[in-house]
Amino acid sequence: MNKETVDVAVIGAGPVGAALACRLANQGRSVLLVDRAALPPMEHPDFDGRAYAIAYGSRPLLDMAGLWDRLAFTPCPIEQIRVSDGKPGQPASPLHLHFDHRAVGENPFGWIVEARALRVAINAQLRAEPRVILRAPADAVVTRSAEEAIITIAGDTTYRARLVVAADGRGSQLRTQAGIAVTRFAYRQSAVVCALAHERGHQNVALEHFLPGGPFAQLPMTGIEGAPHVSAIVFTEGHAIADRLAVMDDARFTAEVARRLGPHLGAVRLIGKRWTYRLSALHAHRYTAPRLALVGDAAHGIHPIAGQGLNLGLRDAMALAALIDQSDDPGTPDLLQRYQRARRPDNLLMLAATDGLDRLFSTDLPPVRLARDLGLAAVNRMPRLKRAFMRAAMG
Ligand SMILES: Cc1cc2nc3c(=O)[nH]c(=O)nc-3n(C[C@H](O)[C@H](O)[C@H](O)COP(=O)(O)OP(=O)(O)OC[C@H]3O[C@@H](n4cnc5c(N)ncnc54)[C@H](O)[C@@H]3O)c2cc1C
Image (cartoon, rainbow, N blue to C red):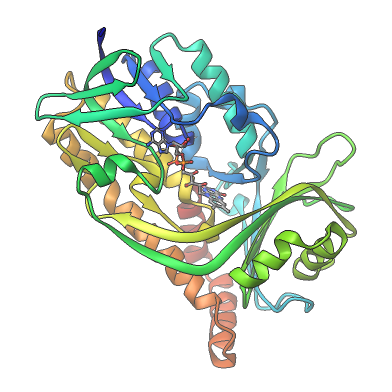
């Protein structure tokens, strides 16, 4: 059996693992990237209906990993965010919160990027990057000691690495194998995701409309041929309603979306499929073990209410890559400790904030409703606090 040495092995070629692998390769490191699934089918339009809100602060990693310029479709900038409270079929409460990017400078809050567009970019960059050895689909068996990690791929080469990175998502086997416990929160909610063509332009405004069943988001997207005005829709409902939405015919489903959206975009039409995701959150008690670092959803999963899950993962990748860049050995205990110190507080804060937001807005009790509407309106009149929120949203 052959034995090859690489600097870092990344297990999981989702957006976080793949972006990290490309960034490390860009820094001159040799990387083994393994995914148990084949990557080309992930480019298919039916694979993943998500559209990511990529925060302004996440772009540098995608730039430095060589991914931004390869995005298959032009990302749509988010220039304004409108947060409101309401009930389906009724107009949004007039006590809303409005953020305009011009209050904090020239840059947009971020961009809406289709998951598929990012996947096309990742696959193209991986093909072009000679320092990344890609094994997918493949199953890796990992053993670790204080000095190194050994990655064995059935019927293939055995690799030696100084660090193994678990980027294998929420069900991370590497995390379990390392005996790292997690705290989980099950939301009794599912997110229904689809793309919508509409009659009027969205003016690069993202809408977060809080409804009793859960948040409803309209995210501005770049238009396509035959549909100049397009938005991604992410709406959260209890499992029973979400399951009914998943199977109802297109006309009824579109009417349900329109009821939640309100009339501001004119007539709407569903484009393509709809997807349903069960929602949960988790946080790993540790992000490291000897020669192991957890990144992305393997370390933390949050409610999509603020569209921040992937952004946190990209920030993990950025922090880890920066530390590795300063060290000959990418997996020393000191480096791993510094990585955990750099990332856990930020991720925990976002987990608590998204969980709190969901709880606050998922209740329809009149006094709570009144208090939060007044709260939104009050914050709307506090320019300094609004600017602080806007900077946080930009990452
Ligand atoms: C409805 C919804 C909307 C969202 N919207 C946003 C948004 O707007 N903005 C945002 O920032 N985030 C958003 N998120 C969160 C975002 O999707 C996740 O945070 C992100 O996908 C995590 O990326 P990852 O690479 O860490 O993990 P994953 O995307 O889960 O990738 C893990 C990879 O590991 C592979 N794998 C798993 N196990 C193994 C194994 N044993 N061996 C080898 N490979 C393995 C899998 O095949 C997969 O390719 C949303 C989530 C949902 C559910």
